Image 1 (cartoon, rainbow, N blue to C red):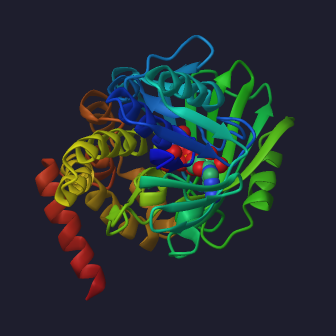
Image 2 (tube, rainbow, N blue to C red):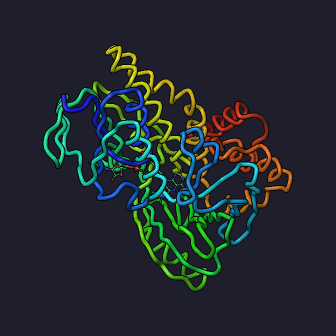
Image 3 (tube, rainbow, N blue to C red):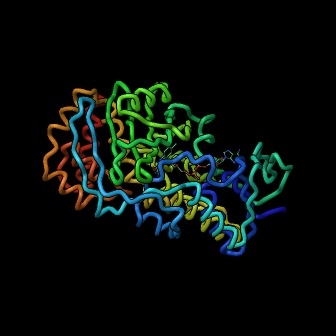
Length: 378
Ligand SMILES: Cc1cc2nc3c(=O)[nH]c(=O)nc-3n(C[C@H](O)[C@H](O)[C@H](O)COP(=O)(O)OP(=O)(O)OC[C@H]3O[C@@H](n4cnc5c(N)ncnc54)[C@H](O)[C@@H]3O)c2cc1C
């Protein structure tokens, strides 16, 4: 055996998984096909402080780009409401630095990392890479959405996100623009990173994301683009089996990002951590059911919430612009107050249900969304 574990994909989930495995004294190699960890950054970087704390990462000055105080949500005709996000403690990370910070943690724990090395093929315990063939006991697939493209194209939306310099960017407010004609099934966003700088993006079903983003920007005023990225996002929730024989799938490759916003730093990162701990346990016991613990742990934490998000998404996909305008009209100051005080960034179906006009607890929300969903199907 060259390594006990080989992880393909050196981003948040793969690196956190490696950190956990190395921490328990097992040999682990991370291979990353890009030439640098964290680059190109294909992420908005929006995350809760509690989320990154749970991942065991305290952002450094270089990692933390901005603090968000509010989110402004805008309808197709320009109606808007603002959610105070101070209580939810939301920040924007520079993923280039954040991923390197985790790489450092993994390396300090004893993991080995190789960039410009890609996974080509898996044959039992043999891993064919661009750097030759290696042997290991467990292979971890942390290759992100690219791993899902061949399995299921239906849940994938194309996104475009540019780094933009403009004086109309609000320093501490995220903006989200809904328009089912321009960004079907998704939205456009502005994520400020520093004064007059933001990550601005769009995603949607069957759209040319670059054209939609250029149109969006042209309506905003003068701007300069200093970086462009195009990346797929996954909106269909977790795949059926995270573990298959000696292959463990984590992060975006396992569909662990939110079906509503495609945010995945927290839930994919925890996927990596849970998998890393389970793999470490398995390497000691060599009892296969031990490996299955990982899916159970992740599902216990996120299963219900992701199920609710999928239902909310189904509802939203049925909305046309008229329905969206109606929803905006029904949002009261009391609803916004409740969301600001009780809403959670990482488990946001409570807030979504409030906006959709559903009253009651999360359980009630689940029931009502379920009913609504059943009605839609009949
Ligand atoms: C435009 C955009 C904006 C986003 N904004 C946010 C946000 O604001 N907040 C948030 O929480 N989430 C956001 N996300 C989602 C977030 O980026 C992902 O959920 C998260 O990065 C998933 O981490 P991961 O490690 O599973 O996969 P990824 O970050 O996708 O990493 C996969 C890694 O695998 C490597 N790889 C691929 N194939 C191979 C191979 N064959 N061999 C070796 N390496 C390979 C890739 O180069 C990459 O480094 C956004 C995503 C996009 C696209």
